[in-house]
Every structure is written in structure tokens, then in C-alpha cells.
Image (tube, rainbow, N blue to C red; front, side):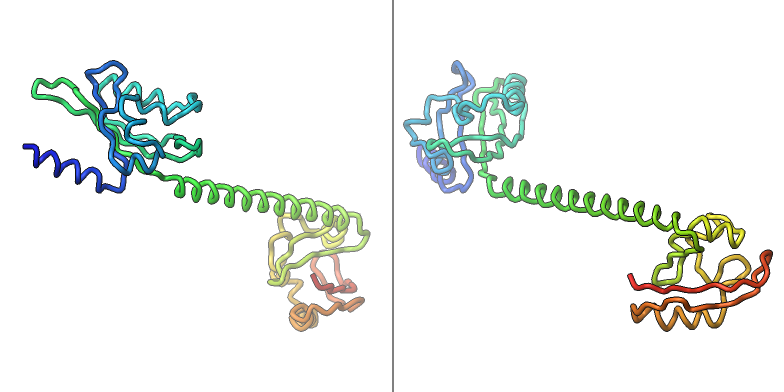
Length: 249
């Protein structure tokens, strides 16, 4: 029997995770066994650990809700798993992943609890850094989005004040914006214009060979073209000449 106990003790001491056993039949459930890994994790010696309740590892950090969860689980005789802030002998914080399980005798009485502990400080640090990085990226996205919205509002206000017909196109010739003067001059609505391909507006009245040639040649080069005049017979308003200005982004 003694040989078996020695084998068990050797097995527990060879484990990489911290292991403690508490005596539930004694007041305050004191630690009656700890393995070598627990001594290493906590920084305390065997004699400094035995006889104490394991709450001493929380030091003055007593407001953690996990403490109450542990207390309730022990009172109810249930298994529990928590991640809790602990402090080693030098006062340094480490995150402890703690598993607690009750041990019952033949009569069903809980005589002991076994606690298995893993130092997960590095994992917690990595999770924190990931959250910080995510938060930083989200802030930058929000700032950039606000900047773009502000710029768009600013440009839109300028476009609307121009007393000439003005369209803003993207690289696919889709209308991003049309000022009021354009809508009024060509007798079209905002809904019929913005978001549409220039050449498909209305009954394709803007699908003009000279205009298409101009845009397809000039826009990819980012070179400006100013005062390029086009004359066309538009439905509802008749023949109309206009000057085209193509400016790079």
C-alpha cells in the first residue's frame, strides 16, 4: 500500500500543472497536499503552503467575482472551472486556470477537494494584446470613415454651389454625385442619376462616341482635360453644347 502511495505522489510531483488537495472535513478547507509544480507556480515552499486555504493566492485582490463562484461550488459540492488572478510570493500577478473537483468517500460525504492549476499568464497577455490591436484597428477605421464622410460632405457642399452642371464619376464611369444645376438643366432626378453608369443614363443619351472616347482615353492616365466641348441633341431639352472637365483624383 505504501509503495502505491509513493507512486501516486511521484506521479503528482512529475505533473507540469499545479495540484493541491484540501481537507473538507477541517475548518476553512486547508491545503493538505501540494505538488512541486504548485510550489514553482506560487513561489511558496511546501511548509508555507500546507495548512492554508488557497485563497491566500489572491492576496488583496479580493473583489473578483470568481472567488464567490469558487465558494459557492465548494459549498454545493460541485466541480468548477475559473480563470482567476493570483499573486506569487514576490507579489507578481499570474493568471490561474483553476479546476476544482470534490472527492467523496463511500458514504457520499465530500472529504476533500482537488485543485488543478495552470499558469495561463502568457495566453491572457496574448488575448489582451489581440483585443488592444482589434480596438486600435476599429478606432482607425472609425476615424477614417468619419474623415471620408466629412470630406464627402465638404465636397458635396462645394459641388452643389457650382453654378454649372457638374457630375462626379468613379473609375467605372458610375455617377457618384450630381449637382442641382445638372439635375435642373437636364430635367432628371437624383434617383435617376446618382449610382448609374453615365452611358446608361435616361435612354442612353450620354452614350456619345466623342464623350466615351474622351473618358476612356483620359481617365486611366490621370491627366486633366479642361474645356472639352461636346454638342448633342438631348431629349426634352433639345440640342445642347457643354464643356467637359476631366480632373484626376
